[in-house]
Image: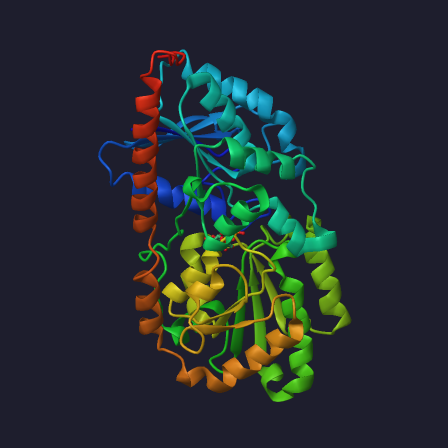
Length: 427
Ligand code: UDP
């Protein structure tokens, strides 16, 4: 089975945690690795050139290639203007497919921009389109309210893609139900497949040792945030919760440290990020500079140290399609306090591996933090937290279920294509 995967705007092998890189890069990277478990699968991942030094075809494994095609300037550009370069990228993709006589069985597109390219390939080569949104604009708009800043075409394009794709993979039951309700998509077209965790990359390390290595003290109470920094991630409400905790529980608050990992490189990306500026202004106004530490993005293979050093990971998002950092922290044995949204209600078992708070409600978060530190000893131990999560979420399972969909859809469309009234497929 030859898969034409499209990830127009993000290369699965770029530094994670920056402005435009995060869960989607991880998703593609993990899926392309796990898909090689199936002997008949070969996957080409098409992405736009973002760095003149990284071009052409790169073999990731004997069965997976990343193919860089020109689509706009050869450097990262604002996501809101990327749409302008889709025609160039689509043209180059078609020009790649035809002379090389590549014959793909399906298009597997990621995010709305790639979905639009995928639709063209689907139409021109008569192969099915299987799309994954990663995030949905209408959900993001409702959550981010006045801070919603997406390309004006995104909402309409997502509705269109939901209708024209042969199948849609949703990362949560919540997303599936939203697509049914919002766009009237039949349930039969939607399949929930949970993302997973890489258990070889995320496992518990001795807390004392990693704290020493990272420069924290044994007696510190460490609250960790990991991820991109944009309004919908809700980091500001965590800052406000720290302020409210200072009034409610002054003794606890004097021991607390908030470690922020993400947002790209500290020296170059942080000053350009509007949300980081807004958060840093709030920190200054609340006089919390001694309590909050911005570390910038870290390589994914370094993150287990931060997860293991922390007492708790807080995921304050207003909206998440899934929330990989939550399962990663849990795989490292670290409890999580998360907003009461989407899939969190399934991942987190209250009082065992963490707890919830009301979304976008700093006083509810400060209560949860206070409660967490007073009840911490009654939670499951690290190894039990890890075992529970890896028994439920693994990339190998995500890949197996996705492959099942691919086989079913390709089987169906091959039968249809063999009907005489269908246009022939090139190559
Ligand atoms: N990540 C990373 N380094 C960082 C921050 C984040 O490697 O400094 C990775 C993290 O391990 C996770 C992903 O980025 O796999 C973020 O995924 P998530 O689903 O939490 O958020 P998204 O980016 O999809 O909104």
